[in-house]
Amino acid sequence: EAGVAQSPRYKIIEKRQSVAFWCNPISGHATLYWYQQILGQGPKLLIQFQNNGVVDDSQLPKDRFSAERLKGVDSTLKIQPAKLEDSAVYLCASSFTAANTEAFFGQGTRLTVV
Amino acid sequence: AQTVTQSQPEMSVQEAETVTLSCTYDTSESDYYLFWYKQPPSRQMILVIRQEAYKQQNATENRFSVNFQKAAKSFSLKISDSQLGDAAMYFCAYKRGNQFYFGTGTSLTVIP
Image: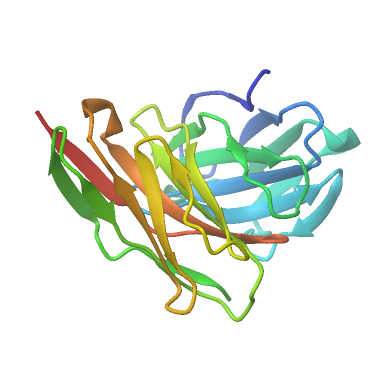
């Protein structure tokens, strides 16, 4: 079974530029999560999708971050414009349902904003 | 909001010895799931073990076991016969429905 795929693995951009991350969840997984993990901290949930609908985006900085999950499969997370404090690893995870099951993670994208 | 606390930023253990990582959480719910995830330098989070809150029996997966104390809201991870490959960040996580929260992690070093 293929795991959660994320790309790119690494990205370096200048502040005020835009960047986009892509995630392909495990086939059949209805729930998709995007997490931000700053160095030395635990993952912080940015947004959660159930199929193509947003379930929770309460911690998403909506003035600069956006995410979509068209057709309820792949998802993209965008930052525009980026700030220095956005430097982090962005993790995508998926689970079969939003119910009490574990989530499976991708390898993440390490973003460095200079 | 639910919170997950890991009070040990760093731990070390001698190879082949046993180590226990601590985790406490805050919730008013009675039905939820708890997880321990391992994150090696490759960054991929790997599920180590899970515990359903309605089960009294502590979960066990080979060398990994938990001590789940529901009343105390405590969920510690015991690693027996530690191996060099166990070195990683370990995250405790709480999940109930749409809520999925992580602790700040414990960095485990295994000394040869």
